[in-house]
Length: 387
Ligand code: B12
Image 1 (cartoon, rainbow, N blue to C red):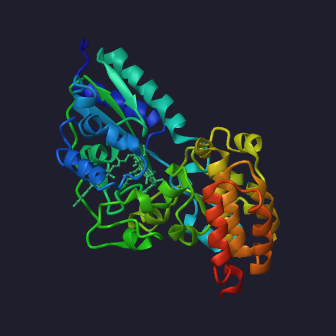
Image 2 (cartoon, helix red, strand yellow):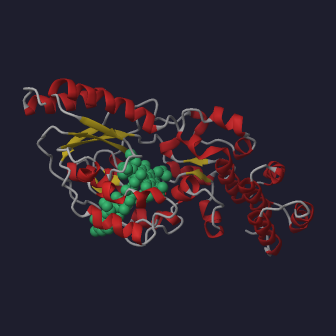
Image 3 (cartoon, rainbow, N blue to C red):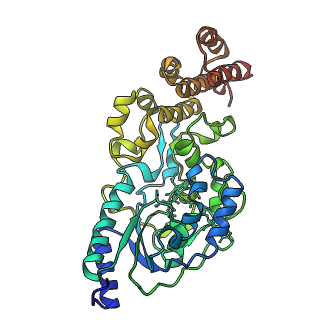
């Protein structure tokens, strides 16, 4: 039941509360404002571009149309939080003994930071307007980017993420669905022009065309969503990126207007700015959980994380990492053992690799790890001998 608050007063309340909660921008759209999204999402899934993210296919219908997710929804309030970095994340690529954790994951999990605040704002809206609300950040079947574009917060750039003229490519998105009828804002238009900086910046050629991403090739997917071994063709290209990737975002010229995040919980934790690979390689499950407590990194678990660090170690050319990589050959997780084999094949000489293989293959039973050894033994030249 709607109480007597005027539309203007409700709008003012939403803007005031969003600002108080630390959101950089807020705007409103209608549930039927993204008519092109269902077909595009369906095409994405039909072409298999979502890879192993089976939940994208399972939630297709309600994800594509907000009114299928919640038939009573009348308005969608889209909120954006700035997480702009204070330095260019690409500078880390020149430090091969260090790990690059993508900007979004260098402090608290943004889901946790945003969800509580969205609920507070939603609570205030309910108290004043007597409407129903639902709050979503990231994990719900909601197409946040096209909704944000329709609300006018920015446009979906060629890298497919929302770009803002005020905050560049560094915004997190969240939504409040409500049964209240709110006047919608005007959609933003595309300001990418002929620029293709983000497309050219991708280390793994993950964009089959502008505005389309093949998640299976995206380093973010490969290091976070992908549960198995990282396909060989991408390992060298991943460099030292151990959790997510910022290259397409960081290349965006609109970042010249971006501002460093003022939100302390989203500004980088000092020890996650450029952590040493050597230290990360030594994390066991307990140490991993403590080090990444409250961080989004925690959700991939220690084994997948160490797999990623081993790929970066293999790319480092740093022979002081041979010993910690070798220690992981006996790890309980086949995923870790396999990645350790690859790292050593890039760091140690052929004689050392062949001696290690001889020992390991006497006891190894996992097919994936055996295949890694076979590949390591047939590799003609280890990386450290190359220019
Ligand atoms: C699945 C997912 C991923 C997947 C797939 C990414 C993708 N592009 O789909 C992976 C794991 C790869 C990923 C990576 C990242 N993600 Co992500 N991800 C999501 C999630 C959960 C769903 C996105 C989705 O619906 N994808 C399906 C595709 C079909 O939708 P789409 O990208 O909007 O596709 C559109 C275009 O293809 C377009 N299109 C197609 N053809 C054409 C043609 C023309 C001419 C035009 C104009 C458009 C167009 O139409 C489609 C529909 O709008 C959202 C959260 C959410 N619930 O929305 C976060 C989200 C998109 N991710 C986010 C972030 C921060 C990231 C990373 C930057 C993290 C990192 N640093 O590693 C990277 C960026 C990689 C990239 N370039 O996309 C933020 C983006 C914020 C923003 N400003 O846009 C979101 C919104 C989470 C959040 N709540 O803030 N992510």
